Image 1 (cartoon, one colour):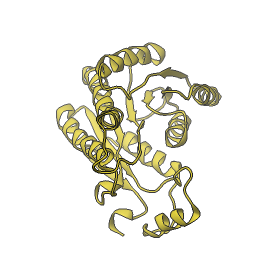
Image 2 (cartoon, one colour):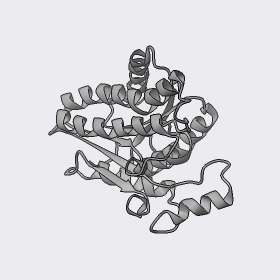
Image 3 (cartoon, helix red, strand yellow):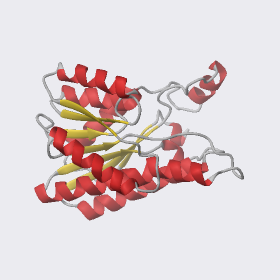
Image 4 (cartoon, one colour):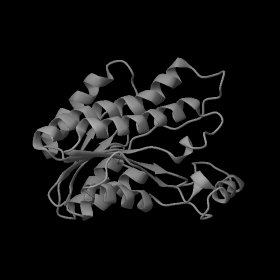
Length: 247
């Protein structure tokens, strides 16, 4: 797919990896819908920056963290997104929630919140996008998974389950939406140091990669760009993890 003039929805796009994906695709000529939950100021600033590239950029807020009524909230968000930028050619499920949940102390609230943001919302977004894409016989859906599915971390069971479900969803969607819509995932490894992490903790993370360094948001954005521009890849999960999954 040539991105020039195409319309792209990126969830969680106001900051960090989502922001880099948005800028990378805008530089290729795509119009961008920047989704955010509470980062209105950052989203507005990103839209202003994207518009300097000569493309359209709009922002729509939505909280994907609720379990009850989430499907209806997603539908409302999707209608606003299409009204803002037109029919969507590419959906990037980037928004994600990540925090530890010690086994034996996992609450229903934490389980529901992690599964809602990381799996339930991406599914209903993909369902909304997929219907429209099938009618036009073209489209791309890309979700951000996690390399750690190969080596689950202690104390992150609901998060890991949500990302495992996201991978399974990706494969199933690739089958259901073939041959016109390609559905893939990117599995990032250690991309940015965790907020508040100690230098010793960061050093340990780096040592667990083959390349002995953190990746950058740009590395993930380039993988997403590849999956959009390639028309012969579907049902794939591409690790961008510095070799963490085999270290």
